[in-house]
Image (cartoon, rainbow, N blue to C red; front, top):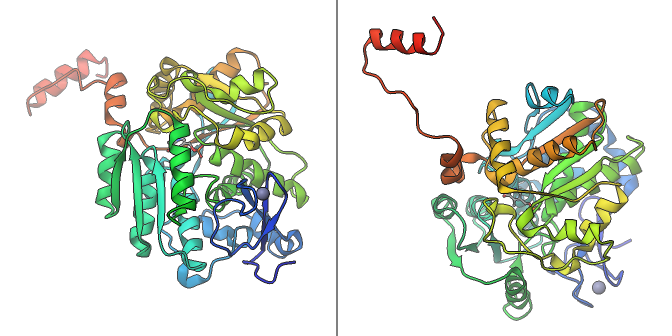
Amino acid sequence: MSEKRSGNAVCFRCDSCGEEVDVRSHVNLCPHCGGLLEVQYDLDGFKQSIDVLRDYKRDSIWRYRDFMPGVSEKNIVSLGEGGTPLVKSKYLGPSLGIDNLYFKNDTLMPTGSFKDRGYSLAISYAMDIGIKRGITYSSGNAGASFAAYSARAGFPSVIMVEYQASNMKKMMISLYGANTAVLNFENFTQIENMLDKAVTELNCYSFVNFINPIRHEAMKTYAYEIYGELGRVPEYSFHPMGTGGGVWGTWKGYNELAALGITDKVPKMVPVQPEAVCWLKQAIDSGADEGRMYGDSTKTIAQSISGNSPLQGGHRLLHAVRDSQGMAMAVSDKEILEAMLDLGREGIGAEPSSASSVAAFKQAVREGKINSGDTVVCVITGTAFKQPNAVERIAPMPKYSLNADVDEVRELLEQLNML
Ligand SMILES: *Cc1c(COP(=O)(O)O)cnc(C)c1O
Ligand SMILES: [Zn+2]
């Protein structure tokens, strides 16, 4: 076992060549072959803290700090991320004959998206191991989150935000006080190459999902929190998928619960992409062992999940879907917009990308894939507030207007059959 462990994190292991790398070293990718690194833990160490997993209390992700790479107290940068409500569906689930449908409402995170889980951990860890500067590429929400946490931590950073992001997302990055640049590109492979070179030639530490080996470790907290609140694991876990860090980290968390003997199964994992770019579904349906670039990322309203090519072949995601006997799904913009209205009626304002999990759930029910007794969780990843023009398309300005006169209020109530 390495001398330089971090809490219960023992080392990184390379997905491709199996090489073990010091978990506190300043690397993004495997120094030997450039493969993706994964944090390995000491399971006996986890057992010391197992009560934290068994008894649930709504708290931040730091409740689970013993299950993530260790960070000393003084380097933790936290704004209250995680511990979001698991809201039971009152209308949509029952209307489709599924009584146990839940929404994990991460629109309530500090910067309005689930990205805060990952950045709280990754920036804290970067400070802890002495990283001096960071860069990231973002479809918008990651940038806002990285901005908030790096500014709060006093951690020097640059954020490249893709040109398609809404102005609000771009402005939020500036509001949090971070350096930002708009990123123009033709396809995601270009971005991947540029980031590779920034890491190897400019010695930057990258915070892009998977290239950064820490961020998605925080997504394990989805599994811990959902299990904690339900007292069991759901049959299905639906996730909007961009790079796949969210869904993959969640799958890893569920597997840890199983390895610790807390649960005896892992949910079927269901990553959801827009039809326009559904490379994972293409690969799963064709039985491929590698994902390939597919479609056009400008052709969907779900801009946060519009990436059209897998990182390093997408092996992690193919494996998570197959191993959990899950499915990869694709939804149209029309289905997404309808799902935003379904969520609105449940009291949740979601941006298009985050409503894709609900759109896919409806499709799966229509196709007879969900049993009426199944418990289903749809992760709702980001708030409607940051993509106002999408909201405008489905939720028009008020139809009625009146003067401040009680007679006009009476008239309106009569018109609405409320008197
Ligand atoms: C980033 C993002 C996603 C995709 O997350 P990945 O971890 O990249 O798969 C989904 N929904 C929203 C709202 C996002 O901001
Ligand atoms: Zn390697």
